[in-house]
Length: 163
Image (cartoon, helix red, strand yellow):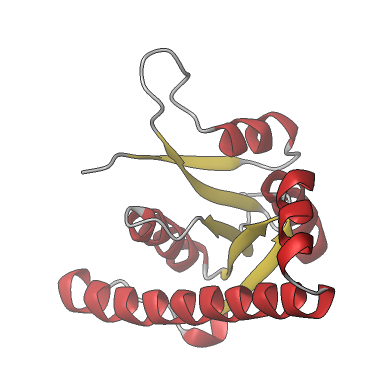
């Protein structure tokens, strides 16, 4: 029986190069008539950052700032998806039906959230980008490397350059 890919988890850091990775996710989704969950993770603050914020803001203000940041990230993701789908449709005919796309913005540690959401949604594959870190570092970013190492499902890594 051929491999069935019905659920794809696409993760994004919202960098300028991220739309190229999304194109891979759309391509795979269209090949398998799969659903794509597009996810961005707002990273948890370090204990030092939390302490600094606590000195200047109340708990309510700090939580409101995080909610605002989460809302802005979700709006940016919707805008990028809309723009990319329009541009891709015009150039190559590739497009994804909005009914086969879910957008999520999560809060937490990126590696942990990516792995837990992939399990939660029953993803068949994870598609993510990795920034080049230079000769002294491996070609994979640290989040991509840790997800690749711990994932129980296939992970597609799209190398990102700053071009």
